Image 1 (spheres, rainbow, N blue to C red):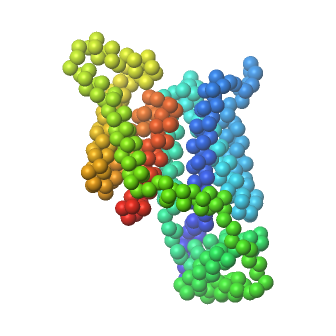
Image 2 (image 1 turned 90 degrees about the vertical axis):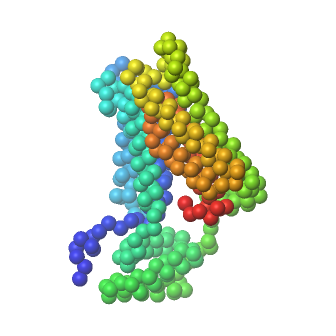
Image 3 (image 1 turned 120 degrees about the vertical axis):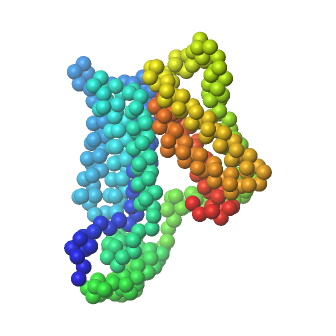
Length: 364
């Protein structure tokens, strides 16, 4: 007999990776668009001489609505809506983290952006973890079957979904030791086989329709030589740009102090350094960027001379280091001006992984 701890152990919900992705994208877009709107609008305040309705309140409201929906409704669409509302809500909430951690309620507190970025990276790690194949125990499979079979109630069960349900039911019936669970699986299998179960035509989702149109175009125009050439250019360009500030500091090291100050001063007045104590971390950032820049240039050169696997692997490692470590310092100094750079790095990494998977047969 199974223990109570095993019977009540957590089971990952079917489609959990989609819900986490919706929350992740909604969270990122809400922070970026909020900062962009506030900057373009001159940071307006909603309220009067006494009241100030901060956007953290709207975030809390959306989080509350997002948490109530799956508690009240059983419909599957409620989970998608909850994921989006939760993502937007937490984005509006965490965008004001600078006010929460400073006595002066400093919205522009330098560590605020790295904190938000770290929270985003942790959510990305959660998404990667949730994307892993779930444990296929008979109990867990039956949970997912009971979720998916609600398509029958919504008259939205297509042939592919029925085939997946029958495969899951067969797995449960063949592997369970619980006679009650086996009878339930067999009964549901028999029910799905009956003629009166309505099967609707298979319809592509909006994303699938877009993919069906875009995929042939990518195969036609984004050929291996073109993609390889593009990656060489963008990897090399990122490496060269990363070396610019590093080269300036190397040149400045043997110079007198006044000359060093004249090189650093434009960075200070430009807002990169807010105080003298930030200088050490700024130097760490520049040296790390310089090292990464050198490695990216080397990876581009390896690809050029035909050592694609080594070059792509090195570029992947460097971009991961940049996105997860160096960007914490970049966001500290540049705040949200670093968003565009981070997006370019991320999409470059995605293209490299696509190239490795499609043309080098390397699983990613």
